[in-house]
Image (cartoon, rainbow, N blue to C red; front, side, top):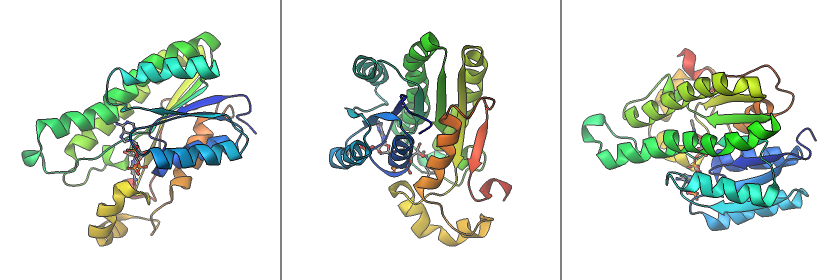
Length: 248
Ligand code: NDP
């Protein structure tokens, strides 16, 4: 129970990787503030699962790409839980398309969700962590930041920015006991990758050193270490959990 007494805010926690992270942290004793956008039934199922583990859990519905939302959520979490020890910036979207065909709206939405929202959420959470001189922040990046596929320019730019932001925050916050890292998943079995896995399976499999896709729980394990009190010396790091994709 290494997270006993701690509180984690997980964004985009109703499905996929975010759900696995929230459950993993709860299994290790953490109370959970769970943000999601629209999948209320799924979010309620996650909350039920976490409550079943004996942890406190609250849902914070809101589109994290709306600049008002991160501050509103953090105000709510502070009021209800009184502290935030762990922040996992997980919510993310793709709008894959060759750049010449991308609309400004899609570019802006991808940057707003994958890059600006994590920045504003850290801005809202950092003062809470600074007061206790303790915090662990994990940003969910992507192998696309270093190895983008065709049509991923908006997403790769956002995740590359997120990795640079991770390092910048590590510099600003380490002296106050707050460690900031990123996890860069490869191809994980979630709804986000349904299309990629069905259309480009052979090509992706050819590039993978470990010849399988991973389950969300594999990413949750990596996040759980970086977010835990056991991690006392790793900050500004990007941990690739990608079956060797970055070596291809
Ligand atoms: P899914 O599409 O399966 O789930 C996304 C989750 O994020 C959902 O809970 C969704 O909520 C939530 N979400 C999306 N947009 C918003 C928003 N604007 N505000 C609040 N919540 C939002 O994605 P994955 O689980 O696959 O991806 C999770 C993270 O991992 C993302 O950052 C993604 O970029 C990254 N990643 C995923 C990879 C993969 O192979 N799956 C590979 C590399 C990186 P709702 O259901 O309510 O819409």
